[in-house]
Image 1 (spheres, one colour):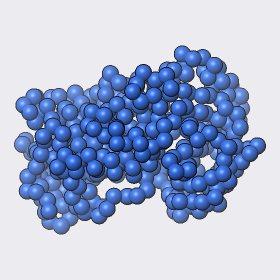
Image 2: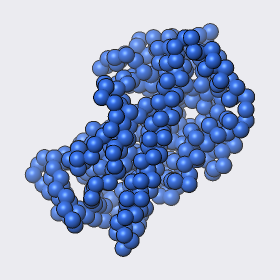
Image 3: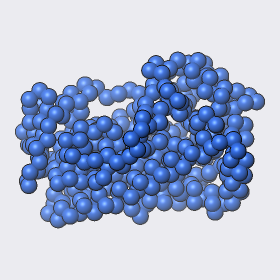
Length: 385
């Protein structure tokens, strides 16, 4: 049952919502989490937790139980079929976690939920938010069943189609197109590709991400012109045949699940409107190239939770404006980086020889490879995290 009042109401129980809730609960804040779904999803898009994100999660006691559930990846490679154009090593990262952890988002959410529960919290389901009435002292949130909750602060962590963002009147800036269409799946494959690294295949038809997960599973993500609602194993086999290894092609032996999604490259005009705060996909969405989306959202969440706890302890609420001003440029930079990776993949044939030469040149320069590793791992943002 919903409480009548709470200090902080978090709308959405994905990785961002659970992270900000755990961050607040760890600091003794009265926080309530609601979600419109009656149970957590068992399938999800994100498949990598980067080094800086693990450092951030360590602050709320989540990194240690999460690491054993994943597969450490020592490097990230960019390929054109059988040719390795660029290798980015993670083993020399200046971090306690010198790798990228390959783990299903569902597992990440499960560990976060366990931590939030251990801190005395729970996710209330299913509650669909339908109204928001802000005022000088907080906001009243309305739900589809007629219930209301009075909160001093409302956090929108409810994804790219955020109800909180829309009801707060915050614009979601971005191109007015249909966005990029993606297919994704967890499959089992017969493959000669190394199981300790993520591969980004560049192809004229679009990029294909090949990411190994525990238990012999591989996550595939690919852009397509128009994704079917229920993709089958043959569709993913066709994508591997078209974009993956050529001399010794992968063979899909089992499709565990497949889905589609569409992404618009957008960033909210502000991450704060009075008592309403945004984090994660509610604040920014972009291509999954580079595996940055969930990681950026988790970074938002810990930064927001720590800042909001200070405000509730008596610090001025202008600290929240500083949160919004600091996190928005990071979102724009990550969105631009993901877009550049996508454009590299879809470069016209005439420009591909120059692109390949550039990538091989970067790969031969240790300092350049290290800078890319810092960028992909999120450690380049450590000062802002």
